[in-house]
Image 1: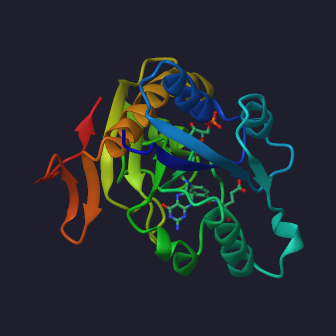
Image 2: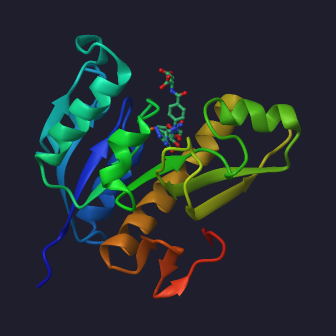
Length: 213
Ligand SMILES: Nc1nc2c(c(=O)[nH]1)N[C@@H](CN(C=O)c1ccc(C(=O)N[C@@H](CCC(=O)O)C(=O)O)cc1)CN2
Ligand SMILES: NCC(=O)N[C@@H]1O[C@H](COP(=O)([O-])[O-])[C@@H](O)[C@H]1O
């Protein structure tokens, strides 16, 4: 019986994507072990969610560090102590120093609320609406130094409807995120998705375009 994939979650807020991962695990769909939930915000609701599920938590306050880079190295040193196999950014709202994330190349993923490469960064729903896009969505990608620029693993799309605003779009997109992220983590846990020198491999073949959900 293979040992379950050890997952550390990084999150800054509500934690609904972490909750979706927990639920998938409880349904037996994710052969993983959540070894840590780490946050930069002591009041992040995701921490209570983790504690309620018996998952160890850690808070590191950026205000206790001289600068961003020092913080990032301290954060990942502390995370490394939990010996995770995979880091999942689930609403982690800090741009990470490229050198600090280097040891995690190919072992860190992020869920982003846009159809990358469109709308890297923040305020994605507002930008899609402003652009008059007909469709929007979410992407799961490997994390690299380039903000939201890493190889895209999978995407889920929705149609932007008349009358949609930022709030309704975010609300309609969340359930798709809650399906997409667990599905990608399950593929990684099963060894079906890897990131190498040649890019993403899916079942041993180069992934030439993102998987669609
Ligand atoms: N080096 C990388 N760091 C991060 C990545 C990445 O791909 N490479 N993904 C992001 C996640 N993210 C969007 O999916 C994201 C998070 C935060 C920001 C941002 O501008 N943060 C500001 C602070 C914003 C705030 O406090 O509200 C900042 O860090 O100065 C953009 C995109 C996670 N990190
Ligand atoms: N740039 C990163 C970003 O905006 N991520 C987004 O933050 C939300 C976190 O919600 P959650 O805390 O309920 O999972 C999610 O919608 C996720 O796509």
